[in-house]
Length: 228
Ligand code: CA
Image (tube, rainbow, N blue to C red):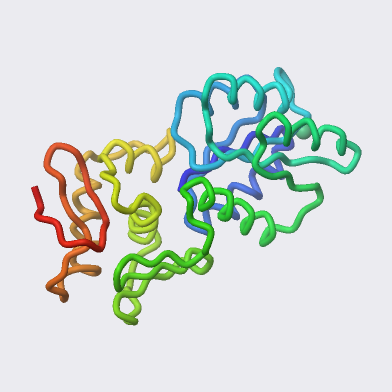
């Protein structure tokens, strides 16, 4: 999952980036509102952490501009106690949640994950697709009760496909949501990860869950469909 953090207190921004990266997120940082707005409008994030008091453009104006432009990415506002009035304004402008500073990281993490899931219509932290289950809180996957030994990146691919189950996810969409803007990728990388996932998720089972839709992308679903 890809997260944008717009926060001008650099030490805090860097601590958050590190924390989220340790939890498997791909994180882009922005230290002012204008740059943050540019990134939010032009790249595909799964969630945005947005400070209110920012140089160049404040967080509320950023949010308003974003929503007016039709960007529906979940936004969690970071607010100091003295900004309680801004909290109400933020929620009215389409913020999904707000977190009062100082916050503790596990709470923030849980709320970011929850906002991402809710945006995909998934309320329960456990995602079930046929005999495959993912526990999104502790980032593990099982098939028929057996723990799948996935690397952190492999889990990210699987979770993204699982949150978009039954939908065809294109290769570009996978790149956009799993890698940061600064990542210089080899275009074969997706084939490598999908092939690893197939081996770990599907190889030992006759009923395949990961399907290739030629020219379009990949689809994770429990129903039996012919690969095209
Ligand atoms: Ca600030």
